[in-house]
Image (cartoon, rainbow, N blue to C red; front, side, top):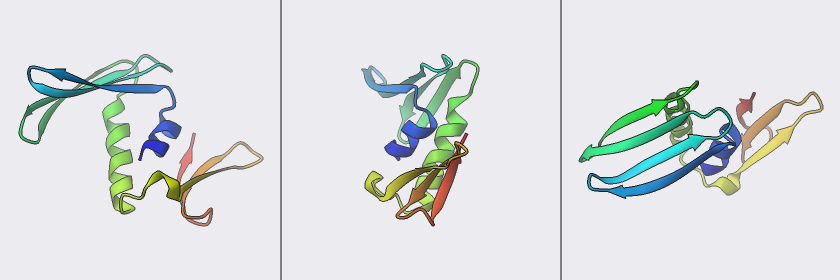
Length: 103
């Protein structure tokens, strides 16, 4: 998951911050200034706060959903192929098993 997140959002930096509400997850994308904060509300409930030119929550949830659908593979099972035309393809286990084409 981390490998793919770094490829899809290379400018994103994240931290976990301890607050009176619990552990909050903050991230900032240096590429465009977008940011997101996940605030715990108790149990498994979170509030998502985000701002900037791009909403990061849909991108992150898609990455997590795809990672779960693939069986939560560790990063060492992923690879990247760059074609002569500049196309970047992320694959799982071998190049014949592509999972995402990067823009």
